[in-house]
Structures are given as structure tokens and as C-alpha cells.
Amino acid sequence: MEELSRSVSELKQTFNTGRTRDVEWRKAQLKGIIKLLDENELQIFQALERDLGKHPVEAYRDEIGVIKKSARFTLSSIDKWVAPTKKQVPLLFYPSKGVVMPEPLGIVLIFSSWNFPFTLSLDPLIGAVSAGNTVVLKPSELAAECSAFLSKTIPLYLDCKAIKIIEGGVEVAEKLLQQKWDKIFYTGNARVARIVMSAASKHLTPVTLELGGKCPAIFGSLSDGDMKVAIKRIASGKWGPCSGQACVGIDYILVEHQHASKLIDLLKKTIKKFYGENMGSLKNLCKIVNKHHFNRLHNLLEDPAVAASIVYGGSLDEQNLFIEPTILLDPPVDAVIMVEEIFGPFLPIITLDDIHESIEFINSREKPLTIYAFTKDESFKKQILAETSSGSVTFNDTFVLNACDNLPFGGVGESGFGRYHGKYSFDTFSHEKAVLERTFYFELEGRHPPWNDFKLQF
Ligand code: NAD
View 1 (cartoon, protein in one colour):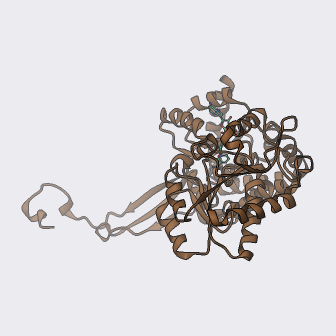
View 2 (cartoon, helix red, strand yellow; view 1 turned 90 degrees about the horizontal axis):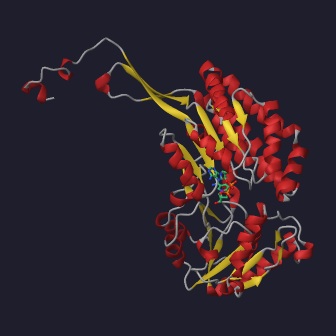
View 3 (cartoon, helix red, strand yellow; view 1 turned 30 degrees about the horizontal axis):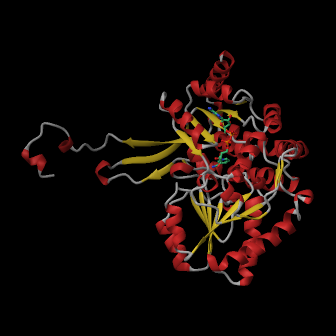
């Protein structure tokens, strides 16, 4: 605890020197992140392979590549973002000048999760340093190799008096939460988010909560050609990023009865092509992060009604923590698999009489982080946008929105609040200070007492 308090006061001292406010300091940190990724690609691949069995192509796409892109985008935009923005002021106060000026919040705490251990650590870090803050980053203990790598390597590339990596599990997290922060940025599950929020309330610390939930995919009526593309995107979007252990992974699909068998048939063929025929030949898939999550997923299939709904896959390899891509057709909608976030390679398909019923189905549950909808029906698209609520909506693809620097990423309701990526990250870690400057030239006497009936006329 004493060591933590020392680290926090060192960060406070650094912040008070004003050095992190300097735009050149911010740029140097962003360049440091890019350099770190450039010079340590192999070690990053190895750490991700050991923690999650992540293939280097997937690791590059979802972690190294996406972070380099984000850091470069921030570098090229930061001069514009730090500049005060002029605002119109009412004529009544003429002559005067109004601006909004972003200022750093101070000392921020970032908790990241294990499924994208680099992206979920470094992307918030990019936001925090670009806004001029000092930072404590606590990577997830569940991706231990990645956490150790970040802790060892970040001080070699970034200002270690302003950015500290503190490793550890729940005990360390709890101690960190006892400190006073100017901002807490948390990525993880909703149960711990509640702990974070109540700790933050003690000091009225603002929080951003990046959580998860059950992201549905609505599968409408498509031509054969469009369906082929959609199936590839679904198969790589469901099992591609971290074997379904992704907050934006498709949790379940909603489809009309008449299209279900074709959908399943094409999915099966695509799974075999992308990931292999059976348990023994699986490739390009991450492992389940640990025994606890493996058992959690195993238990979902223990329900006999759920087991009976498996139409593809269902094999589990406990020794290597692998689970086959698995499709389930109409498991009971009140089974745990349809109530809690799956966060794994199971894909329930729920059939409906009419695809428009999907809206009621989604609205009967917590607000999801993302809704995916595969459809070319413009009026249905409008209806989905108008009648559902979610962090984001993607039509006709899966997780690519995350890589769009100009679109905000974040949840709503049970899937979290606050947003980041690109300028939204800068804003999340800044305070927008309103500044009004007046002159002494004119004075409207009507604004000052004594009050009288004449003044009331104005
Ligand atoms: P996790 O176990 O790695 O926990 C996340 C962080 O919380 C870690 O740093 C961990 O040390 C800390 N933590 C755990 N227990 C704590 C406690 N009692 N007090 C304080 N801190 C504590 O990750 P997880 O929660 O298993 O991650 C999975 C969840 O996160 C899923 O719900 C998923 O949807 C969500 N998620 C969301 C995003 C997003 O960007 N929205 C990204 C990844 C994961």
C-alpha cells in the first residue's frame, strides 16, 4: 500500500511540474508507443501466443496494427485537438471572447482486460497521454505474460515518472481503488464495474466503464451472393477475435425459421474451411484463457436442453483449454447460455416467425454493446436504429467498427458508459474548460441593483 501511495504521489509531482501538458511531451509518448510496437513485434506475438494461443496474424490485426493506427491518427491530429475552440458569446456581453479549452484531468487509473491485452491497455493509454495526464495502468492478471511484458517494456519507451504499470490481481486492484484518482477507465465485467464505481464515488472521480453483454446479430433475408459474404464475416467475427472471448463478439443470431437451415449449413462449411474439420485439426483459434473460464463455458452445455440443441461442434479439450466452434439451434431462451454473456465459441441461433420480432427480443434484454444486422432492407434498418438502444450498430459486418477512429466506441446501460477511440479518447481524458474574457469598455447598468420598474421592462 505504501509503495502504491508513493507511486501515486510521484505521478502527482510529475503532473504538477506541468511537463505532461506540453504537446511535445505528449507526442514523444505516442511515438514511444509506436516504437515499442515496432521493435518488439516478436516478443508481443510470443506473449499473446502463451497467454491466449493467439495467431500472429490475428495478433497483428487486433492488437499491434490497430494500436499503431490509433497512435498515428492521434499524433497527426493532436495539434488540432489541444487548440482552444472559439465559441459564440451573446451580444449582451459584447465585447468579449469565449473559448473551450481542453485541460488534462490529472492522474488517471486504467484497468484493462485480458482478451486483447495490448489493445485494451495501450488504446486508453494513448487517450490518457494525448490529453496530458499521468497514468497508472494495471493490465489484467489473467494475461500474465502480456502484463509482465508491458510492465518491463513500457518504462523503456515512455516517461516512467509519468506512466507507471502496476501488475497484480484483485488485491492490487482493490488497493489501487483506495487511492484518489482524477479519472478511472475500467474495461471488464459489470460486476467489478460496480465495485469500481462505488470506490470512485468516495472522491467523486469520473469513470468510464467499457463492459460487455450479449451482442445480437439479426440475420435478414439476403441473396445467395450477399449471404456468402455475410457468413464469412460472421464466422470470422464470432470465432476470429479470441475464439469468441470478445466484448463485441456475436453472442447469438436471430433469424427467420425459413432461413435457419441454410444459415447453419453455410456456417458449418465456413467453420471447417477457416478453423478445421474437427477437434484434432483445429487451427487459427485462440484457447480459452484459463480453467475457470473453460469450466464456466463447459457448464453452459451441461444443461440437458442446451446440450440437445447443439447442431455442430460441442467438443471440449480440457487439457489444452480448446473448445470447438459450436452452433446451437433454439436453446431455451431462459437457459443460462441465453441469459448471461457467453464470451466463448458457442453460437446460439434463435429462430423467429418474422425477422421484425428480433426488435422485441433484443429490447426484452439489457442494452447490448453492439447490434449487428445483416439486411439490405432500408426500412428495417431505420426501424432497428429507431427502436433499439445499444452502444453501436453495424450493418452487414461484424467487429470492424472498432477500427474506425472517427466513430466512438462504448456501451450504454448495462454495457457501460463513456466512449473512446480517436478524438473521443482525447475528450474522455480531458476536462473541457469554458473560458470567457470580457473587457472593461461598456457597462450595462441595468444588470446591477437597485431594482426598479424601469429595469423590469428590459
Ligand atoms: P478481467 O478479469 O481481466 O478483469 C478486468 C480488470 O478488473 C482487471 O484489471 C482485473 O484485475 C480487475 N478486477 C478484477 N476483480 C476486481 C475487483 N474485485 N476489484 C477491482 N478490480 C478488479 O476481465 P473480465 O472482467 O473477465 O473481462 C471480461 C468482461 O469484460 C466481459 O464482460 C467483456 O464483455 C468485457 N470486456 C469489455 C470490453 C470493452 O471494450 N467494452 C473489452 C474486453 C472485455
